[in-house]
Length: 218
Image 1 (tube, one colour):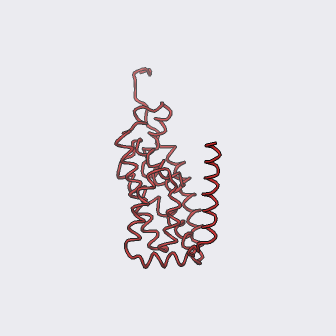
Image 2: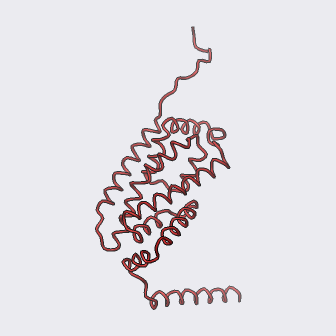
Image 3: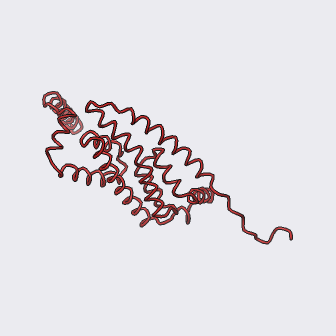
């Protein structure tokens, strides 16, 4: 009986949502941008804070980046999205570093440790390439936090790596209002290619000389 009641209740809620979606007029992209502009500085501030906090979770960052282009246009959209993403990336890295430290270097299997060591030899290239290639945002923040990547390389690599892909998605969001944005597709292609190339280069690393353990013949 309870299951039937719950099913009817759920069906009623879905029906109400469908009715509202068809009856209540939704704003067009242009109208939404005009509303944001009339809201003044409150709109970008609230968007920035929500973006920075929510994207520390596995919720995809892409939705916020598209929304930034739709609501604020290409210039302000890129600036706000990149700034909020940087705050989120720093928070995720700091949380992982505080809780897990450099766990991979200390506790990971030997092969994983070797790969982590090679990647961290070129840490700036590793971080930048990982951002360019489009690895999921929040998981990457936490993963890098438990490696031996240092803060300066993480900050610079994240900033450089975020800009092309973020700009491309913001341009797509802006295009919804009626603009044409072929540059977004160019940015996607370039950032993806550079990211893949960088990861391949980083994974090879520099071969370190093996320590002399005295077993070799004199």
